[in-house]
Amino acid sequence: MREFMLTLHLRIHDSLTALRRAHAVGDDDLANAQVGEIQDLVEIAARNGIDIGAGYAALSPTG
Image 1 (cartoon, one colour):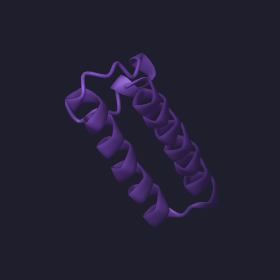
Image 2 (cartoon, one colour):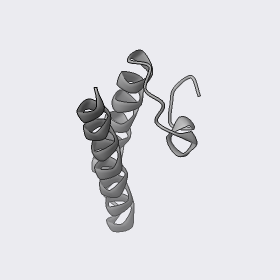
Image 3 (cartoon, helix red, strand yellow):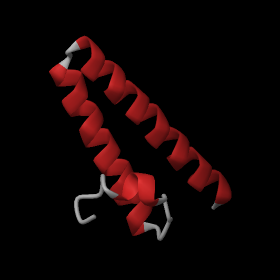
Image 4 (cartoon, helix red, strand yellow):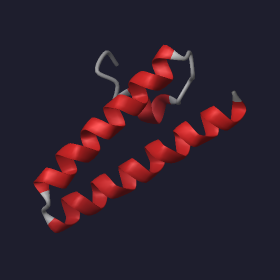
């Protein structure tokens, strides 16, 4: 489970980085895709009882 949690955190981090880059270059389509990816990852974490921290909690559709 530890490896799963680490992978999930890394994927969220990478998606947030890509989202920031997309915003910086004005790529709205890529930004929207990254938002969807982040929401999916946050949902996966919630379904598996993984605390992803307060920094990501605001990204949750229920959060």
